[in-house]
Image (tube, rainbow, N blue to C red):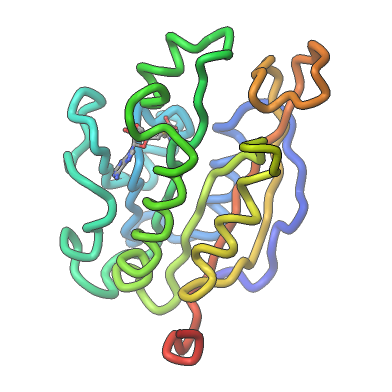
Length: 214
Ligand SMILES: C[S@@+](CC[C@H](N)C(=O)[O-])C[C@H]1O[C@@H](n2cnc3c(N)ncnc32)[C@H](O)[C@@H]1O
């Protein structure tokens, strides 16, 4: 496992570029690593080359996106057993996209607009997966989360929440920002039409002794 971090690196351009850099940096042994994308959807973050390199195992609660495991990522430790996975990827839905100009596309692609696209679902799922994620990962395993900050009920939510909800089992090790170019009203609290916004990859490491944090 790499000892340095990419901390605060800012990527322009595509989510695939940013995700490839994070994965290749933190999981440098693709031929032997077990990588599980727990909320895979259409795997937009994965380039074809990266898929070939890592051969990720995919989970999604929607069968229409054709995951390898059609199921709930809450049970990842039951699917794989304990200490079996090198890297878990978690990119949950959390935004109501009714105001998005691409809302129809986003609805089908990311399950936004389904019953599980609310802040409340994001919160309850994230709290539920923290412990199974902890057990499924190997001792030096890595959890990579993709998250955007957004406003909900007059509060800024997102990165801070994940750090809190995962805090009993994981600590934040790295934070990588990538900028992208799309007008998404929910994320644009300046209320002017700018096409640029940003998102985060948070890299978590397992706590050594979780009993201490209970
Ligand atoms: C934001 S999308 C993920 C996008 C994906 N990273 C990509 O690159 O295309 C969130 C996905 O999480 C899935 N999901 C929601 N709840 C889930 C659960 N409990 N277990 C597994 N997948 C879930 C949704 O069906 C949706 O496909």
